[in-house]
Image 1 (spheres, rainbow, N blue to C red):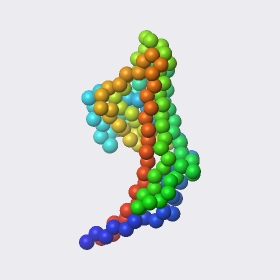
Image 2: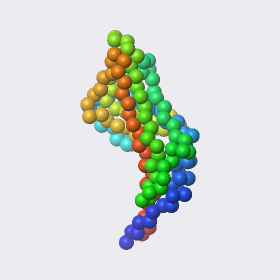
Image 3: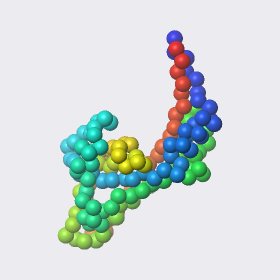
Image 4: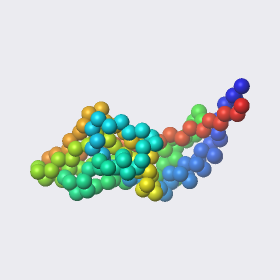
Length: 145
């Protein structure tokens, strides 16, 4: 019979430090309405619909973590501080930023750490902005059988 055990606070802190602290993740907007990406889809497939760099002022955003972003250990998990990526339209009325997905790109820039499909296709125009929040929680459960 499997027996669950919580991973120690020190181990989760070590994992957070090694995997997230001093790492920079990029956040990209992708326009692929109607598409449901799977976790194992190729990075190139996901990014094929990325909004064109410079269109309406679009540029990828970055989020990064510091040691001070590692939260307290509680109930077998440790949360990292919430991070936000803000995309700002540049006000050029002839250019619209349309997107259906938000993609978090790994620090090495070669994989999608996560892909979020929006409930509806979004459009930024006339100096509008869109803010996306990222909440990371590390769970440490060891199961022995």
